[in-house]
Length: 386
Image (cartoon, rainbow, N blue to C red):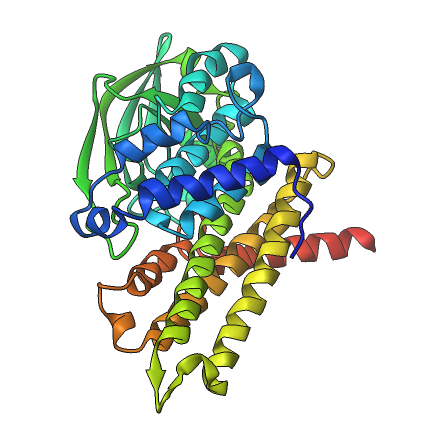
């Protein structure tokens, strides 16, 4: 389908596609099997100006917003969603800075993020505070011009490999969600260390690690927005970042369709390619229809957010994330089915795509939480019209 991309947007998509074919495809199986973080590919992304797509030009980026980011993430995720996550998760960690950082904070970090020299991460989730983000336990106690952080964050994407972390901590327990604050914490800050590195089903080339804070002193100048704004920073960050997950899921789904279609044309049974069988044709058709519908929803959502004409887009962002990730799961399961026994083997990428797709239904808000968000916004909109 024609989406009328600008010349810059076409270049971004083409660059991402070429990079994925040249650098990611040859190593995706090995990096997945061994859990290798793709530092070499991050370097290549930086050289290709892909790391700064969504960052303003004044900080060394391309200023193509969430739509430009989505194009690149989609194209690279067609080849490997796990390796692509190094860039996509950095976007998640960077959105709090873009949305709430002051001039000094942005000047300090954004140029290095845009060049690929610095990765970032987002530290919200804890062992007992995932979907229930208001129940975080990590504390930050004021001590003069500093805050002392104590607590543990779990399942943090880009954990240990990032150089800067946005960490949400409780500064006033009596105020509930309004008593949380967002801090920028540099890797190497005394009292900040890393714990367990997770062994995952999919996205194995991505680093997922615990963040541990033990009397970690952070200067008040590292606060994003102001004290007490942590929950708002986190929720608005997710509203902006969920299209990135949708793009990852869409790319995985598209890659799975490519693999299934190619295999179905080559594989022969009963003297004919299995692509000639109506049962297979219907599976391919359903995959293609859902993927194109998902792409339309994602692209329109990203365009809408970038236009800055709509202040509240949590509903649409959640829709794009939930729909694209559900499509990815169905598409990859069907791809494995079409490949049959071959699809179950690691000799083919379909099984990896299925494993990678699953996380997109879980992180940055499970699809059940996204549906809650969608329904709540619908109810609010309906009430406001009365």
